[in-house]
Length: 430
Image 1 (cartoon, rainbow, N blue to C red):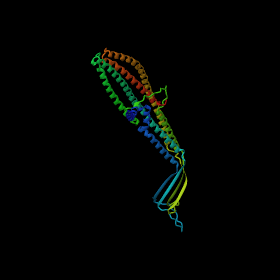
Image 2: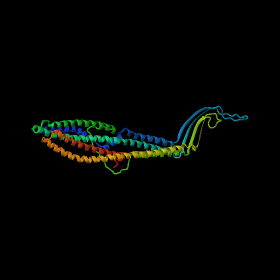
Image 3: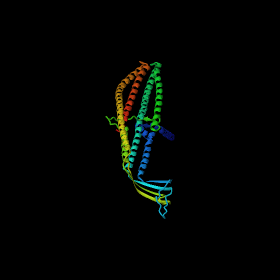
Image 4: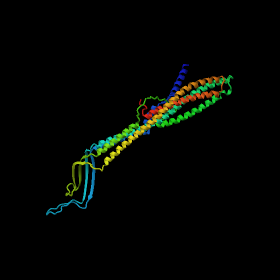
């Protein structure tokens, strides 16, 4: 007997181990913050972050190499129609003139000694360009939060409605048992249960509709966050901390500041490019002739020195370019003001929706207790044969419509509250 119990116990434990992973899958949960975190890591736009940083490092490396000596190899072969010669003939002296065909190859090296800080200005501009590019990616990723918020809360509403439907089904099944008992004992007519049976069949249709809608929305959410989300997922209800008149922290505002800083760096680079530049140089060569034009043999030679370059007059081209950049900065200022205006208008509209939904919820919470009392009374009357099941179903349906409205308004309020914080750039900063 004990052996039999041990065998059954082993089998039960084995079955439990087999079933345990499925229990874990069924209990898998997901939060809105996790969705936001995943989209910033897995969305294709996010791949640009590492690419921009790699590109910036390469560009900075190339710019800094301008401080190193520059080496050039040059070679040329020429033929000229005339060469330098003495205008007089000297007795007993023969002067060899340079050949009309001449050849030379040189290695030129130059080292910047002073460039007015132009190279450093280029590096600062490149860093500014990278900051703007990274912030643009941040803005694009942030824009996805609104789509995820709507998808997530739409799924959450389906989840809440399904739980409400399950409670509705359970209550109807209890009522159906009572009615069938009354039919069996002859206190109720056989047709008394028909309306309840029909409603239970409708509930099965509602289950199918909710499940298909949830599956479709979950697929869309999976694509956005870059992770597969199964149909058994349980979404957690977000909590929203309400703050009074929070300052906007939208990433677009940071982008505007970075774009204006980018223009400042461009203006600084243009200013540096007007300053004089001093380079040390050395040239080594091999040619015919060399530095001695009267020596018609291949010889080596070199010379070294300093070279100053200063473009003192460029028809005000540099000044015009700086003025154009200053206008671009003014344009960004107007774009920033326009963005803030539109953003504030949207916040006002969202706040109006929040106020309206709060009023709806207050009324919903007053309606439901009244509906519950009406259903209790109708259930008693149905049990005693005073009313038909159709009349009961009318009251019962009104109750669950009121509860559905409560669910809808509660989720809509949550949607608008989170939307307000996303629009204001303050979600997750409290």
